[in-house]
Length: 260
Length: 248
Image (cartoon, rainbow over the protein chains, first blue to last red):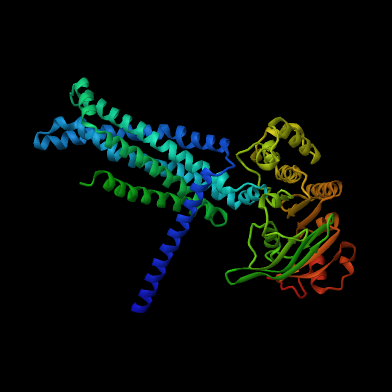
C-alpha cells in the first residue's frame, strides 16, 4: 500500500477517535448537568432505579455466587502447590471485593442494562418518540438520560456490594462444605483481612461502571441510525463500548487505589 | 402566522430544501404535497426546531422561531406524527395527557386524566381505551390517540405528518373528517404534509406543492385542479409522464 494512503487512513482513524471522544465527553457533561437542573422526573427516576437496580439482582447474585465458589476451588487447588491452602478465605475476599465483584457486576450491567437502554432509546428515536418528546416541551436529555445515569450511579455500587457479599458467601459454602474449612474461622479470616480501602475501591468502581454503562446505552441509543439495523447496531455498539470502557476504567481505578 | 423565507437544508451532499418560501395565514389549514423524499417532513421539522435549517428564516407571528423561550414556543404547537409516536411505556391516557402531567402546563393527575378521556371521546374512542397501552391498539386507534395527544393542550398550531399513511380508505376518511372538524372547532392554524389527494381535498384551505426543495405552486384548494402548473397537474392526477421524473 502507498505510504501516503496508509498515513491518510491512520489520520482519519485518529481524527475519528478524537471526534467520538469529544462527542461522548460533551454528551456526558450535558447528561450530568441535567441531573442537577430542574425540571426533575421522579417517576422516570423511580422506574430506572427498579429496572437497573432491583431487577438486576438475580443476575448479579447468580454471577457472584458461582464466581465466588469457583474462586475458592481454584485458590485451594493452586495454593496446594506450595502448601498455601489456608489462604482461601483471604484471597476469595480480596479477589471478590477488589476485582471480580466490581468487574463482573459491571460487565453484567453492560450486558443487561446498557443493551436494554440502547435498544429502548434507539427504538424511540426510530419511531419518532424522541421528536414527540421535544414537541411536548420535554427535553430528552432530562427525561430519558439524566434519570438513568443517576439511577445507575446509585444502584450499581449497591449491586457491587451485594455481589461482593454473595461472592464471598459462594466461596464460604464451597470452602466449608467441600474443602473442610471451619465456618467460624473462615468468616473471621475474611473480616480480619479486608481493609476499608478494599471496600471503598469496590464501591467507587461500581459507581464509575454504572455511569459508564448508562451513558453508553443512552449515547448509542440517541445516535442510532434508521430501522431495525440502526437499533441493532446501536445496541451492539453500546455493549462493546461499555464493556471495553469498564475494563479500562477498572485498570485505571485499580492503579489509583492500589499503586504502591 | 407561519412564514418560511428562503429556508435551505442539506444533509451532506443531498440538498433537500433549496430556498423554500411559504406563508400560512392564521386560522387556515395548509396542506403541503409532494413526492416521497422531497423534503416535506424536513420543512415541518425545521419549523418545530427538530432540525436546524442551514440558512433562511422561519417566523411564527413575526417572531424568529430559533430565538426566544423554547418551551413557550413549543407549547403553542400540537403534532400528530406519521406513526403516532406514542410512548410505549405509558398507558393511553398518560400519552394524551403527557403535556398536562409535567412542565408549565401541569395539572393535578385526576384533572389531567379527565381531560385525556374527554379528548379521547372527541376523537371517537371510548374511555376504556384510556388504560390500555399503545401496543394493544390498532393502527387507526393509535392515530386517533396521537390526534387526541396533539389537541390535548388546546394548541394554536397543529401539525399533521402523513395522517392517513397505513390506514384503510374508510379509516383514512374518518381521520380526515376528524382533523377538519377539530381544526375548525379550535380555530387552530394547521399544517399537514401528505401525498394522499383525498386528504388534501378533505383537510386543506390552501395547498402548496413542494418539489426539488422549493414550492412550485401554492394557492386555495379550489384552484388546485385548474392551476395550469404542470408539476401540480402531474402529481394530483398521479401521471407517470410529466416534468416530475418517475423512477421505474
